[in-house]
Length: 143
Figure 1 (spheres, helix red, strand yellow):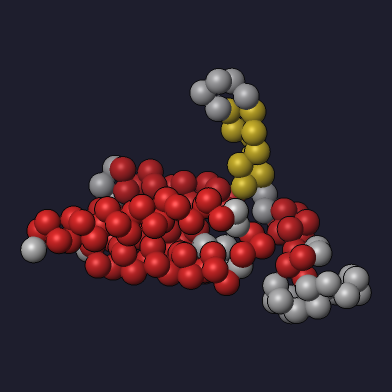
Figure 2 (cartoon, rainbow, N blue to C red):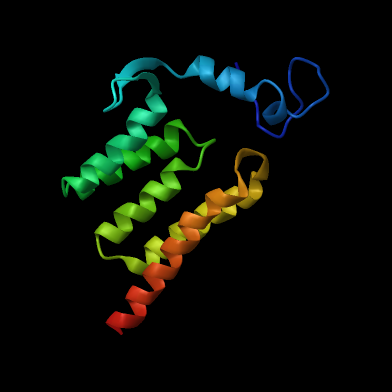
């Protein structure tokens, strides 16, 4: 079966774009879920996307940056329809001391959000804007 683009007409013939109609439902059915437990004892579902995205953060925290980069690449290729890989790549670049590249990936994340405004609350941009400001200050301080 051919992949349906988010901006193509929905195959259900509703007349809406796929991203505004059946995309979320179809995406959830494609992702496998497993129960996880929060520190407060609540159970919640974690998708494969969540596990892979979170594994990048865990690998960075453990200093395994090559492995984090490989997991980020899997994230990019398996879930190209979401922006997680961009923000994870920014974190990897920052951990490597590649500040200019980290800023670039934060900016690319913001551009993705601008291209998909229906998927994001306006406030969700703020952490990336703050990261860019913080990273630019670090660049200026090191110069």
